[in-house]
Image (cartoon, rainbow, N blue to C red; front, side, top):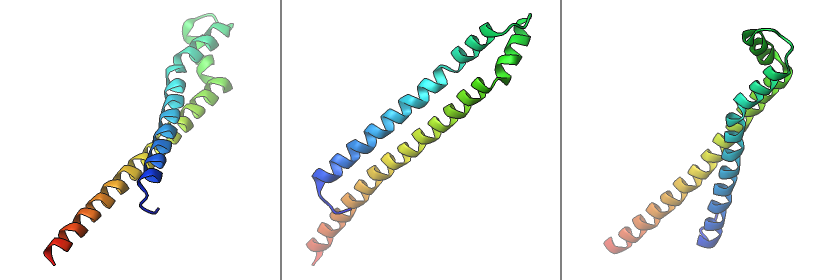
Amino acid sequence: MSFDPDKISARLVELGDDYADKEAAATLMEETKKTVLSRLKLQSDEGSDAARETEALASDEYRKHIENMILARRDANKARVRFDSMKAWIELRRTQAANQRAEMRLT
């Protein structure tokens, strides 16, 4: 990436927005885990609460929700890595520029 501050800033915002969106999606999946479980328990014809919960936990719908929750968290984590990597790259370029200025003063 060339050192164009406007492009770098726009890219950082883009990566930050992507991370925020993916973090929100992952959090939503995590926060609705109990809601999904409760809804599935209510749909069960089993007699005891423990039996309804066992049936709900074993359902394909609950398994799919958990899988999607994990995938959403993975996507959010990857987006965070991209965002943090861009911030680190900016700091490295800043350090590089400072070192070049220091070298120029020495010569």
